[in-house]
Image (cartoon, rainbow, N blue to C red; front, side, top):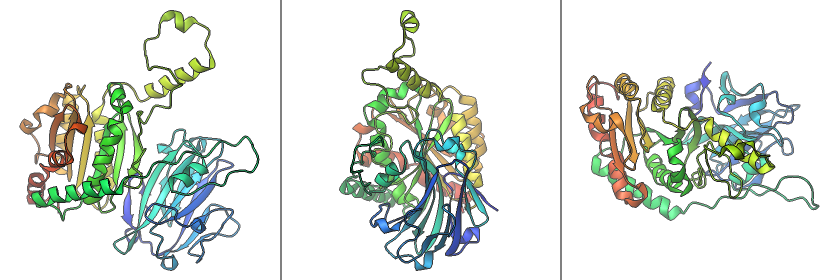
Length: 438
């Protein structure tokens, strides 16, 4: 039995599974609905492929809910309509966060994925994804979600939710996100390809991580949309380097959390203009940790109560940097990946680096792993040991790079991709020679 973790992606045959299989979702939270979305390149192009309690089978019968159940599916991928490129299994609840369940896991044959550890307030979550890649079926463990219910998922996949004929108390559907400019995406992917060819590594595939600084000093960088723009510029790197065209995103402050898998179809609006851990603030409320004493003793209104909850949601992640925690998590995930695929970590940070000894120790211990760390500084902050990576000793191979710019969005795509990728060829050559990359 294999325990799948968020970000795991494997061919079905690597798990001993064929194209005829069963997917079972176990959840003990009453009122949870489970659905399988048959998608075409990330979009619900035909609502007959939304299989749930009201529509228990896809048109050709390749995705079916087992009779007498609502959370067990029989799949015959060989019979599936050729226009369907992926199947995403989801769980939703109309009223309660799914994190309040005692159990929320997926059983795929004898293999398990526990979705609960990654959840917080989400009422809709994408559990696992089966998808075609180079004429084979693969599985990806997801675990990312939305605060909205089923309607938020339907909109996320490009579908529409029928509106009630009479006014009621149901919440309105989540707003649709603007589509990505495919021209811009293609241009950036082409620019990445050009850079990879210059470097002579266009055939090499990587697992790609993006780590985003979400500490207190980054608030303005999120609120002006810069981090969202950085995400949209980096996703094309994963489109070219990663076999599945996806990157695995995490964010961190004093602790860390998953943002989930991101690709060119799901990147727009993924971050927006607020740090991932912060919930929306009431109109006119400014973020302040130091409120006047007289205000703290004043009678609170509903708005100030809500504002305090927002501040606390931010403080749960902490305000300061702890790079070693998230670095250790990425190393752990690399060791759990049976493929041992070379991994590129793009690590965004605005300074405040103080845990120098711990960072150095992690870079040394991971120098025998197929992981290259590319640190990216935003502004002129204190980057500590990151500014001296080239002189660090005690590593099997130089496995890290660093550059800093005042504003990433003021440099061209060509310059950005050159800086992100320039040190990979030297690392690859040395790592291959030592047998670190095979």
